[in-house]
Length: 315
Image (cartoon, rainbow, N blue to C red):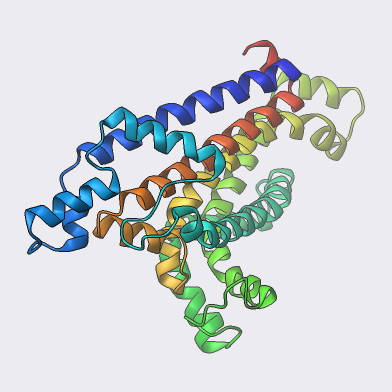
């Protein structure tokens, strides 16, 4: 298991290096001059050139890339062109906001989908299974931002459980911050929860039809014993992969959810940075998202390997 984890770590580092090079290269060749964006189109060529020199934009590509990539392990993503402050300081709080929202959403997905998925598979064809299937179809058809609007109307305007748009920072009141993040997390989680329930139910039913399950059942095991001791272990593997993939999708979907609930997260900073050609901020956000995706993917693979030794043998 130790060798497998080391291999995954090396793969993670190489992947991030490749992503970092592509990201830095693309933002070096796309049209648009950060110096012109900061000074305005009426700035003299001399002022533009002086600012380019100050920002280091006149240096060779590989020199700029090396300075940037060598600072990342130390948490140094460069300096924002627009705000003239360290990018890490600018985005530190934003990452906590998006991370909290995504973790809450993942916990909701896991907490609901696994027990409900197992229940529907165990009672397949029954009234509860049919009702849950219909509810699943409805939630899968709703995009997160529309669910966000619906939750805002019901819990914010009608039930008045929170004040829409009255975001409270985690550094001001952590309890109220968590309370405000619940509805955005639910809006992110519900469509994915419905998909996860359907996936787990289908996998359990497929595993239950296999020869090993029939053999175990014929030896006197009841349905519950067969399900929890044998079938669920194999059926949950694709679900673990799916949940790992969801984390990346939630970060992307969270950008829209931020706008719906008035949350000052990474999405707002990303859109603002793109509009003013603040490339250090954009590159940092892309790398943070890539890092989270790659790390979650690696953790998912390690969990797979811990559950099923065949994964380690085939890698």
